[in-house]
Image (cartoon, rainbow, N blue to C red; front, side, top):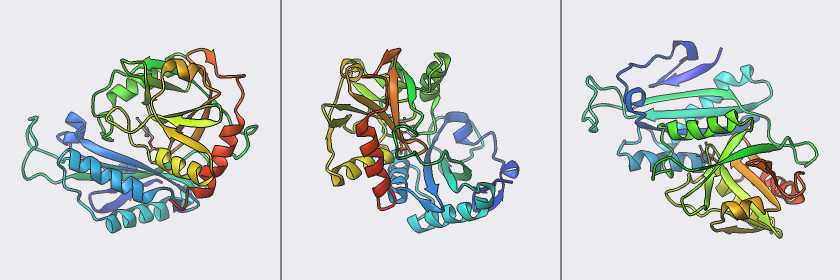
Length: 288
Ligand code: PLP
């Protein structure tokens, strides 16, 4: 059985219960993280915990634990669950809501303590390091209809869920989003990269996109491998004209995309730059 963590206790996931008056349930008032691990080794732990801390500060929730305490909970969740996931690819989900109140009232209440929940889930295996072995994605393209604070990893994910579902309804894997200036921002659950003439581009960080940990590890890995990477805006037109398009996220690492909104990217095959990029990422990911 999956062992979860709830407010100081490790227990079977099926026994983890929270009140319907929890503000996470009523308002989506909380912050979450997803931390990948392979063979017991987490990827980007410092970055994930730092981003969690930034998100909590942004919504005025006092971080209930120190870095060491979070790290200890993660280690224990991995240990409790490793027998259930013999392949060794385990994702850890952490969720901190503002807590449970006695009434439903929008203002941040005094005197509630955060609800802290964590559980382990089966992560897809790490990407193969060969372009012939990877299964690429096809994606939809939509104008971003979410809010103006996409840099906060909020549990209020209805906007993301609706964009993601639009892709599923079109028979594809994900949805890439663009703003009113037709600049690509991110995807509904991933960051976006494109390649043109051997240069890798990804949108710069601002309020329109999540500062993805995979994105930041990948950028550093590319620099170390002497692949040229530029953080700059590009448009949907640039995207459709790219030599390669990739998504990044903690569960997908770098995922090649061969079709966007029904348009084939380049010759429709996974590119050589993706292979160089995933090798660079793989060589660096546990050092980040
Ligand atoms: N952008 C959005 C909207 C996401 O939900 C995610 C991950 O869940 C990402 C980007 C990628 O972030 P990370 O690499 O930290 O998983």
